[in-house]
Image (tube, rainbow, N blue to C red):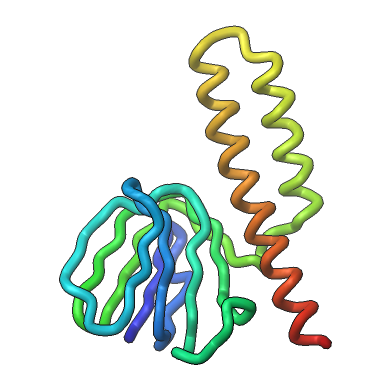
Length: 144
């Protein structure tokens, strides 16, 4: 099936794949070829793509997403994300520093608005760190 990932900055991914695993407002879902028509909200989290039916979980390609819309049906899954980064695009040291700044921001929040913004940033950078770690592990397994 065709899997497309499009952000406000343009196309991030356009491949033939077997499965896409997505975070939605109602939990994680998997979409396979021939899926019934579906439109749902993409929640912030990690999106994974399995290229071939027999690919092990270690071969999944991961993307950190910040939310958007998912359209699926037949042999097409189109993910329209506000932002998305693949594992190789994430600088792990920078993501870790951003995460630590967000934690400090939460500790120093003076009102509800600052607290919510800090929590949003913590969640965003935690996902980026997770995707970077999964990418690093995948790359290490390929080298062995």
